[in-house]
Image (cartoon, rainbow, N blue to C red):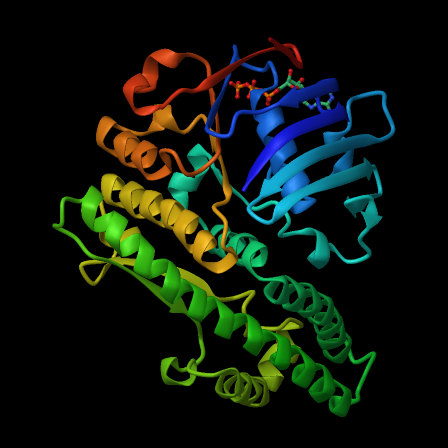
Length: 370
Ligand SMILES: Nc1ncnc2c1ncn2[C@@H]1O[C@H](COP(=O)(O)OP(=O)(O)OP(=O)(O)O)[C@@H](O)[C@H]1O
């Protein structure tokens, strides 16, 4: 899959941009603060209808304007699609081939992107929410069902947490209603956890091969889904559902006392093991980076496997963060198959022989000098 054309109106520092991209490697080059990341962000927002940098639409709209619009022509093996997104400070409107999409789950997935920024190298060592977000964003793009379950889950989680607080402050007393909410929540939670476990197993398959190569076959990478539920019960949606209901029943008083839901996907985590040891705790910084890189690169193959198309890869100033060996692996992995956008302030740090026929876009003050 690739993005052939992009039009932006009043998006960040781009008041007006009409640009056609190359199918291979597109290099966005420019000084600091000129709009390189803003352009990657625009592609990301077009794909996911949300930004990776802000949850406030106001920040995405050019100062002094009221709305922003993004338009993209996407090409897949099966044909081309037009995506359109209008943003205003309080909401968004999403269209696929001119037809408005009432649900985000029917919009997201038309354009699949993988964003790789320097902070992704902290995937292994960073806070648990970084890894949960990673799973939700990546799996959500591969599966409408996953995205739907997550949005339903969040809705009911909010209700259940609010109700637990009411029970805590004794403004509500009906425990039967709590079990109704628990039951609904456990149903969505079980689907999410089961999908996470399944997709992680598949992602592990791809990342193990890459990781072995980068570490010159000295190390083996494994993922471990970390949850308070018994491991042996992670084998089916129904088993997970039963295990969660049991947790809710056993810990009802504790949850009421704390006024929040203590079990479920919002509490789970992902651990990375190298040669059987938790690399966040025992690994060197280099091992943590290798694990993160292998995981991000594996997404490319998993997404191809799941959706039939390679995603578009967005590399935000990441090459300068990688040493030669890791840079070579990254660039070899994408060579000739993945449309790639990479930002850089200079080409000197990029191993030119590995980038085949790049198209350069010089970015200056929210404009492309072509
Ligand atoms: N909503 C907005 N309206 C207008 N300009 C904005 C808006 N949001 C950010 N900017 C401007 O965009 C510029 C930053 O662009 P961007 O983050 O893309 O930088 P960059 O080219 O990637 O630089 P670096 O190499 O430092 O990362 C800043 O000058 C900032 O003032």
